[in-house]
Length: 267
Image 1 (cartoon, helix red, strand yellow):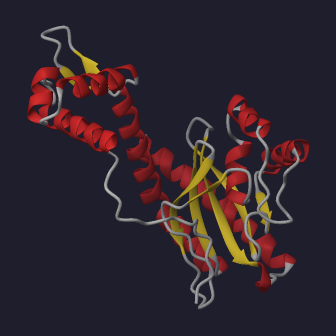
Image 2 (cartoon, one colour; image 1 turned 120 degrees about the horizontal axis):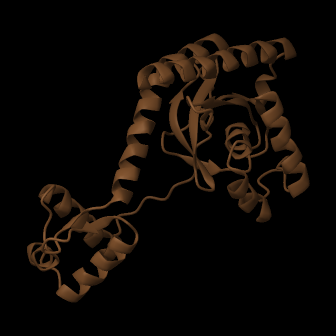
């Protein structure tokens, strides 16, 4: 049986939220109508929506930047917010495809589970995971999300977050998950400074008992932290200090190689 570092998710057969389903249909119809767009009245007619409901949704989507309205005939097209989301999705895809061979090699060298994670607001999302070859191992489902205040990868991403956003996180109560969770603001701030100084973070069962990890940041060509690579292992395995030191050397090499590869792809 595998250990787990997955987040808990609930599955159900409940129907879609009507407003969300309608929003999806509007965006998809505009996607199909691109680049010429479509009028609001025609859009409501095609989707068989009451005009009042369609106009309210369209107005909200315009304010949020998901729709744009042309000056000629008031035709609707997809807006800049959609482009920003699409760019983010493409960047994540490129990052995963570029990083995968380096993650695989790192996992092979260390014999442990290796994750690639990225910040998503006040959470951290697992973008990719290469599991340890051991029969008893940790696993993380791709797409799983974790709090940004506990865990090695989470603390790396929090440490390199823009100062204003980091302050917002630290101004909120820091949740306790285990007896080792950091819940004091000053202690966390000091920890984040040390991570930026050393370029590596550790997790001593802060988010889940029995799970430890080390992590390092992945930078883009502009020096921005766009992800974290972590080596997760069972606390019961109790690796020697020399092993941890070796893992850290290879971890630092891994994130540097990913950065170099990303620069090569973008150049």
